Structure formats: C-alpha cells, structure tokens
Length: 392
Image (tube, rainbow, N blue to C red; front, side):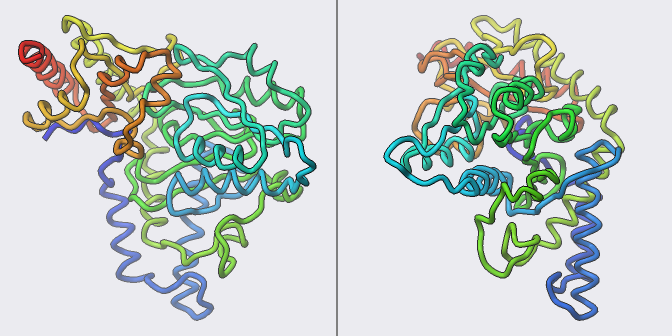
C-alpha cells in the first residue's frame, strides 16, 4: 500500500503506541479518582499536557492552558460556542454581534458559526481566493460589534498557509475586545508557529495528524482568556479540565498524543525537509501529466505535505477508485466531509468552479513517505488519466 492521505490521519508512531500500551496496562484508573491509582493516571495526563504545551511553544517558555478534548472538531466547537456565548449579548431585535471566519474554514468551524447565524448573530466570510487572505476585505469587515474572528492556519484541502499573525494584528488594532481563534490542526508540528507568534487567543490542535491516536484533540487557551472569563464550558458534567470540558479523560489517547508531540518536536526540521522533498517530487511528476492542474497557493505560503490537483474532466471519485485498485490511498478532500454531497467549500473559496472542484484530488504526505512512492503515485495517476479519458 502507498499511503498519501496523511492529512486525513497518520499511523500512530511507535512511541505513541508504547505510551498508550503502558497506560492501558499500568495507569488505567480514572484520572479524576483520588486514590493512588487515580493519582498515577492524573500524573500521566499532566505530563502529556506539559508536552503538548511545550510542542505548541517549540520548547520555549509557555503560557496559557491546554484543554484536552475528544477531537479537533470538539476543540473547534468549544472555541466557537464557548467564546461567543461568553459574551452574553442580549437580543434587542438587531444583530447580537458579528462573527468573522475565513471562507474556506473546516466544517467544524463553519457549521458552528452557521448555528449562530440562525440565532440572530451576523456572520461574515473573509475571502481567500488563490489561497491568500483578502486583508482589504477583512479591514472592511472589522466593525465594533465583531466578537469572534476565526482564521485557520493551514487549509486542510489546498495546503494554503494563511497569514494568521497579520489577521490577528488587524483584529487587535480595530476591535481589541474581539476573540481571535485559529484552527491549527493541519499546521501543528508541520509549519513553525507558537500561539504568541500568531497572536491568537485560542488555538486548536489534534493528535492523529502528527502520529498520535484518533479521539484526542486540544484547545490552547491564553491566560488572558481565562482571567477575563471569555470562554465558558460547552460540554457540561463532572467539571473535568478545570470545568472547561467535562467527561472522563481519555488517558491512553492523551498519553499517545503527548508521546507523538514529543517526537515531532524533537525531529521537526528533519521531518519538514523530508516532507518538502516528497512534495517536490510529486509536484514535478504530476505537472508533467497532460491536463492535470496543480492548485498551488502563493510561493512561501504552502504547507509541506498537502498538494491539490485538478484532473482533466475526470471526477475525483472515479480516480480514487482507480488508484485504490493500484493500492494507492489519496482523498478528494477532507475526510471529515467526504460523505457530503455539496461542493467543497475550501476549493470554491480557492477559486475553483464546481465542475473543477468535483475533479480535484488531495494528495498529502509526511516524513514517512518517499520520493520514489511519490513518483509511483504520479505514474499511476497518469495511467488513470489516460485510461479514464478514453472511457469518458
């Protein structure tokens, strides 16, 4: 099998598996229990919390708090619902406040914001045509009633790296009381950043994108957000995670997340170089396939492991089936929305027409892939284009 769907999920690393196995066998107690076994489990959770926090700050001095969740989607939901409802604006017949988001956001942010639109809030989208934020449009949208702005760091379908730092600075300058959130799930341990370098109040990350297990994510919350009580719980119950996210903690998953984060931090530069080399080989080979178009964000604003390609009038699902028959795994976009029947929001935001978006593949790699495998994916794609074009 040749696996080029690393943005959907990654194989758990050996260190993550060992950490999880140890937790299953030794520190399996409920970390909220006060007996000795519970205390040991709690120590394992806190050790991983410190590791994930350290990875977020690249080993430098840390601030803020990491709240563990069941996924990146849940962390995004907590960021959106928790920050907007914390405003507690009364409904006086007009808008209850304005929420801004980039027009290619992951569904977990976009769908959450849509719920607020139904509840009387004003929602405005910031254009990202060609994989670049429109800062003139953002400036025009920054009215005094903006309460939240959410801009993802790396687009999960196009690989565009948005200038989150500049966006956050623009929000701070015109609406200092607004909350700024970034979904950094596809950027964490892939592109260099810290919450401080981004200027964000809230940052979402996830375990299974970096060699950790599925079923565990995290939301970084700034000290200022906690002090000013600008975030309220969204999942209620026993009050775990300082009351921000109730529910028994997934101790094995958290341990695996921490181990994966430690590995990724230690090996960041080497992984980045390998991933860039694989993407370079893949890009060069696919660019030579007649009719294939590479959907490239601006130079210098491309995530190392994501490549979006549009096929010549061949539906992505058809090509996926062809490549699957060759033992090659790629995707037609985000795995989280692959069962939907609508046109991809990120691809439309990038500038693709519906027919083009319907013929677009996402090929995503990381340090575990090889340049030879990349060329084999391109060769199989070229074969598929030739054969499927004849059938068409």
